[in-house]
Image 1 (tube, rainbow, N blue to C red):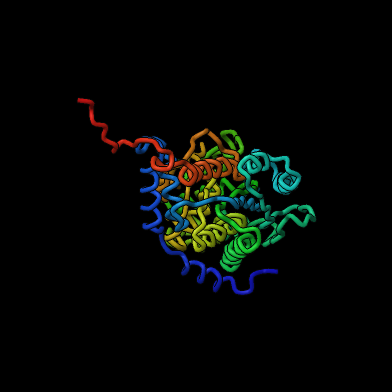
Image 2: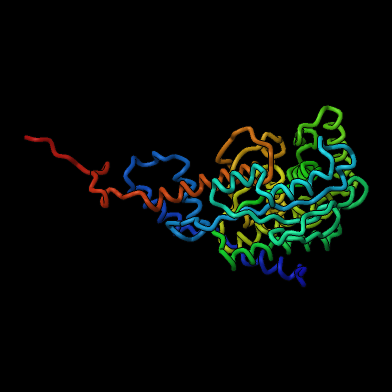
Length: 365
């Protein structure tokens, strides 16, 4: 059932987003200094665990319940030949996610994360499967080069549905860490438009090859983004307006997931360029959300680097990935879990009976 009052749910969620807990972060740092290792010897893992402690408010966070939301939606701009694949692949990949045959299924299993697949607005028929959340906000978006991709009301509905989805998952099995993945032919074009609108980086500089497009398709993609930005005259501070003009239903749903997670003090692990474009929308709606974001990896898409720089995020991994689906985020979750387990489960010098660096050994006379 659709969320009844989308605007009220979004407003109340944004109002609930605070900041990181400095006391929990300091307590985590203090424990790091007592663990059986030289200070700082675990490098970025120590900083990551401390960051997660600040997010959760728990000096020894345990990330037992791990969730990856894969939202799927089609894009009207795909008609301009901006992808190497036809639009029907979106629905086909939704079926593949449900069958467990995609990369994200393998990596989510490795990370010990459950996967929630969402039909946010797929043009083709998706399986009648109880494991699929069928929002179907529309049969894909409209062509953003000719008119807004969706109405402002539908953009708000997409965000609200993402919030509601997260709350259902949290009240059920629970959520200690969440990641956003996506699927949608044409969505890297939409993401690039969002990134250009918010970062003010020229479209050609932030547009990538996505699914492996040739030079002709690349130029068509840049032209579509340039045309859409010129048509809509967007305000970088108006997240809802940008989402409506050039976004996607799946991007809106992920935006809502991120806002709800931040309000609940749950770490948000970002994937690649589309996932991070949703984070830019969330950030425009609620700047406090930045404190709850973790960048899993750096995509090869140039727009991803621009988006991460705007958000002030340094990625955990850089593996040359550009698949999407939440694949990089699943790997990021495994690193987050490892970092927190080290903080929580390693023995301190006192517990292990090991002399630390402050122990003074007097030389024999």
